[in-house]
Length: 538
Ligand SMILES: *[C@@H]1O[C@H](CO)[C@@H](O)[C@H](O)[C@H]1NC(C)=O
Ligand SMILES: *[C@@H]1O[C@H](CO)[C@@H](O)[C@H](O)[C@H]1NC(C)=O
Image (cartoon, rainbow, N blue to C red; front, side, top):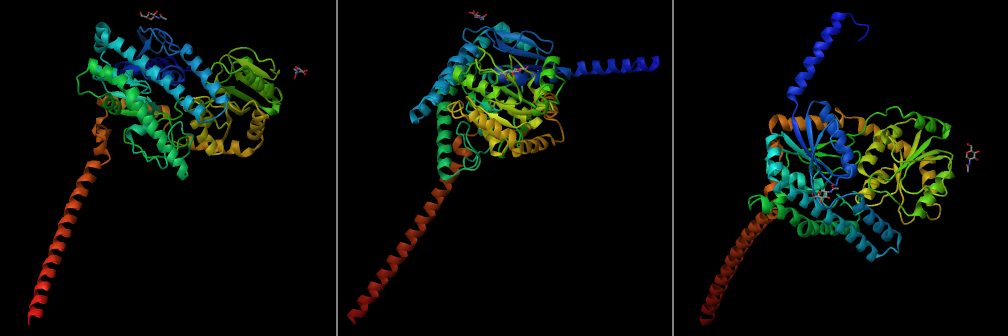
């Protein structure tokens, strides 16, 4: 621009002003009801993108929020007071119990108590969410302000249901940034999902199942459904009953969203049937690596030809038992690579001087660095997608929720190796896994193949997501893409009523035929007997 003649400079400036004002005029008004932790990290990326396209964004959060900063440049906050929160104090005791159970004697009992523990946690989260929704709906001033803001749509993560009910209360189109709903994986709620090849989350199964595994898959499905039907959904239904008209069912609100922006793609997820209003944006948060901060770049360069390993257990996991962290540190110390480890809590005694401990790291930029060799990850969706995008093989150390299942999708494609918390610090397992994935070229080659497949799309996933959000704003919803299935009772959906009806008809016809045949037979017999008698008389 500096070398331009002045008149050209003025013209470009004018054009820029026209362009900007056009954008501001056409910007929409979006209300966001996010989740905490890693879910917020990816929602925030979407908010920045929406903001940069001229939309104005408001974010609903609680006054005890864990991750959601007060007013940023990209959004304004609406803060709802609550007395109970989902944050570190909530997660840490659960984490501790999960680790204790996983590292204890493994048995049917420990499996059951693990399920019970995870389930109690979910139950409490939804209870807290419903309290938040209740506080919101009771606050007339707040609700009036929200109505006056004339939003174009609500964007929410339906793993928690407050945003769904808020969209209904404000009569606004509803868009999901989704992988999970209250009752498991998002597809399960709206798309046909044959359990013969679609593994349930938490089952640890792939899309190739033996007979016994299919039995297990069905059992998991029943557990999920029972939990949802009898323990989670009633919380939300109670809020609906209190604030909406009696015929409003929470499950219909959940299923009735205009658009499902799904945080997976079929490079990562096993292929499965889908729906017209499901749009795939897996890996939308990934972008080419930016230069690292100077001290990190220096550290990374000092690794020479051996390259760098990074390790992160995500936003929810803050502390592992000391024997695990010591073993991890000791293992890293034996490697010729340099290691960057996102770790909170005490400095392990066995830490080698090739290992740098950090509070936070620019994970995407590190994964995209040419010296990156290996990612030690817990298997959250964000990290797994970033590893795919940058083609970095993974050693997985799953802790809870969907993490094992996410890593399994990489392991099935030969791009990762999974360790368990129970055995990570035994028999040099951690060292063996790292050396295997570093030295066996197939891991890297498979991951880079996934990366090429993932990147080969007509539009970047984030642009796809933005297009569809704006599509919903332009057309005030996307009801034409929604199948009728969401209104149907289960017996209509599965055509049980039709099957019963047809069976009944078939039965009636069969009975009539049998009746006719039988009476014919009797008639024949009678006339035969008669004719026999007449013969005898003669
Ligand atoms: C949030 O609001 C509630 C209710 O007003 C209050 O009791 C609580 O102390 C507040 N919490 C924080 C962290 O501000
Ligand atoms: C730490 O690094 C120094 C060189 O910077 C090296 O001489 C020393 O042996 C290293 N210590 C260990 C325990 O690896």
